[in-house]
Amino acid sequence: MENATSRKIRIYSERKVRNGIWSVSIPIMFLWFTRLLFLDISSWKLLLTWPLMLGITIFLNSRVGWVLDHAIWIFEKDRVVRKAWGRTTTYSYRDIIKGLQKSPMKVARDSYRVPLDKGAIRFYYDTDIVRQRHLLASYRYLVKQIEEEIPGLPDMSKIMIEEMEQRRYYRKKRRNFGILVFAVSFLLPVVRNSAVEPAIFLIAAIAIGSQYLSLWEIFRGIYFGRKTEKKIEKRFANYPNINLYLQKISYYYLLVIGILTAGVNVFWIWF
Image 1: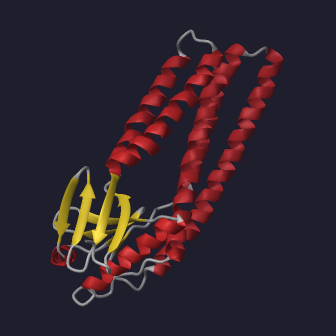
Image 2: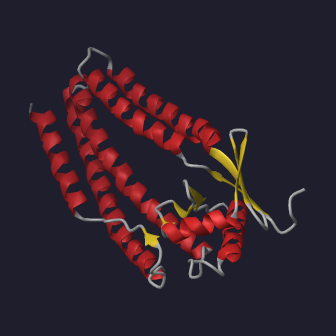
Image 3: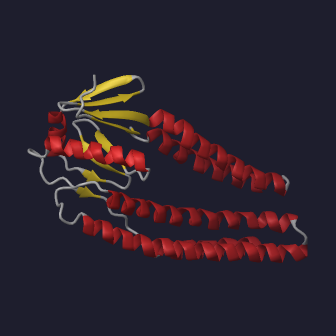
């Protein structure tokens, strides 16, 4: 029977499958869509292909990837148990202490990473109220078990998770609007070849207007993202023995996106 003082948490083991799906599917979608631009294919089929491929990718990532990466960690009084893929692995708290003595705990972009001799225990930031309660209880239980030999580990709190979620939100804003800007640029030749002349200028104006709005959102993502990084850095300033991940956010990203977008638009319109 599970110990009454134990803590049980469902988390992603490594997220390798989900990261792999995105890493493979995005280049494939881009290359396939670029290839379709140079084929004799109707514009409505071209416009339908992109969201269809994107929808399949999102489904694979959110459903299939979640199932394959799912794991259960149980923190008991004298050991830690990991269950995944029908296998059970047991670690002693001595193993965790040895791991922390060899390398510092990492406050990563997506999780707290407590090192083991091989691998790490990852406490992924979660904003869901129920899962977050289990997350905080499990991490604090682990810290309590090892704090005599490994003091000074940072706490995990709801406010800290909200700041990490803000970081993720602004990072996604910069990335997604950057993708949108280029996606609109690649749709311009479709409009030019399929629409009648009076409509071309109207559609092109709407498309370019949406690009400039996207560039504004990228600017906001950079501005507020930099402020969030400063808050995170200040929060962990009193923990010198951890490895804190900080994003390098620069306005050069906006400058490069703007120049490339203008260049691609000019190429499609005039050539």
